[in-house]
Length: 177
Image (cartoon, rainbow, N blue to C red; front, side, top):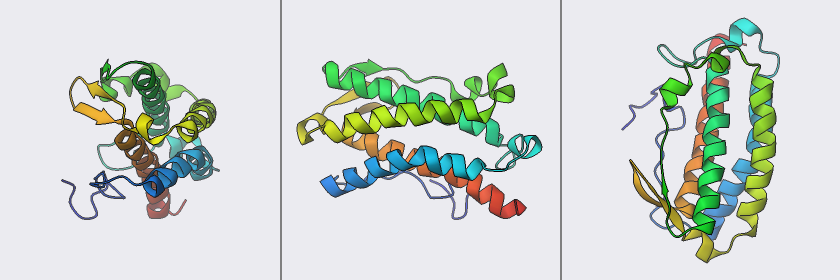
């Protein structure tokens, strides 16, 4: 559980509602629709030194964070598609920290990942908006975390989007950027 004002969790931990309503899902889908533009805005006018600044002591740089979001959300859409086309498929995780140590995480322009996110989110949102309640009850079995419905996964990734944009906006506020 995150401590109050824990810089790792600027909007708090993810806690899914006990019952996910259609309104909860609409809000989550809207969050996912808006996220790429909010991310792009959070990065506006940051220079290379700022992009290479960790969002917290011991944390990833802003650049690493942006590339992580792209990898994570591409993975999420893949899991959604698997769950819609297979009966509770097993999905695997990946070593996020190891990914963040790869060459491109340090040097690739953040615009590349924001561009990826714009396309991924547009298709993700289109698919989510087409789903009925029975499809949101489908899900996958995460090899490490166990079963997760698509309703919970949608809520999780809406939180994930807000969580990481908040890392950047909080850093900007702290630094006066």
